[in-house]
Image (cartoon, one colour):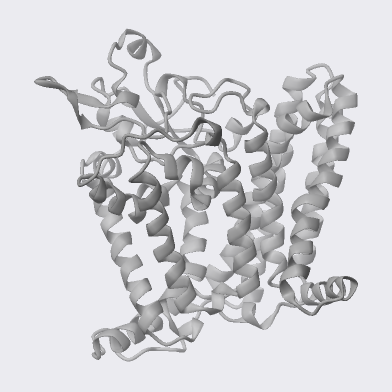
Length: 477
């Protein structure tokens, strides 16, 4: 797609005006903060039955499903409305941090470790079934954002710590929208770089009246959505009104070899490559916890280890699916494509692994979409019940517990469709990357990665047709 072949959402009627409203982000953050507060209070004080508590229902049914819908339909909207950052910004009015994030931590390894830790704790302690623990998890997130960003300047928590943010960054590569410069020539004559430095008051040059990008993305050299929270600070800081929210081809940025502002070249970033692996194989691992055969597998691992404790067996399962399986499949694919391109296996891995991200997004969508669609209407009776639990009055009427959602059989075609779309997207991206790596024979270079994608697709479909654990027959899991 050429530099001019796009539609700018900011110019659309109603939607564009709403996005450009200076209080748009704050309004969205306030709404999500109110929802988070209600979830936490009900989680701590309400009934400790997961399907009857806002903390577990909103977090593990609606939030996760709507997150995927938003990411694939529009972009990183939940980072836009992140209530953690609203609280942090308020606290920064009392204490402005000046310390810079340590240079040796300016990679994704810490966030990657936290991503894996959240997945592990979720499975080990069955957080979907624990309203009070879920509420404390939300409070812990607020505390972590405050602790990091009151000590370190900029968007350190979002860029280097937040595991939800890293998930959103990768999934948003499939979004049909991105922030980009309208006219590169205008940026070439700009001398202030307000989009990244922030706009300063003319009468007080040291005072920033409109902050720029806290995550260090300089718009003229920004590529795609990685590390972009869609906060629109750059849009409001730009004195030339030269930034568009542009339509684009989803996932194509995963094959873009250009140097990216704040990131560099993807093919040189081992941390981004490893994060992509966890994003893809973590989707399969998280879905595996829904099906009955996983318990037989855990018992078998426990017998080999000589223990009945769940933690060691679960740790081995995580190692098998997040380390062993990727090492085998991606190692073979890297060696195969290296032979076809006369390049090193490491280079091929760092180039092609991003092609699997669309499949991973499809798998997350199939999993979270199941819970969202089968439990879509549960929010109504749970909210009605919460009014009674917290305020002693049925302000929204008596809870209608018969409201649930679609039957699992009706959701299966949607799950299969999401998987198929993700698989086709991964194969297409692999071929585009192969055209760059070996223009003369792109099919030979793409073949191993297409094969890996098909293997993962078959494994995912097998999971979807397995008998489900009882937790997944209701609204949670």
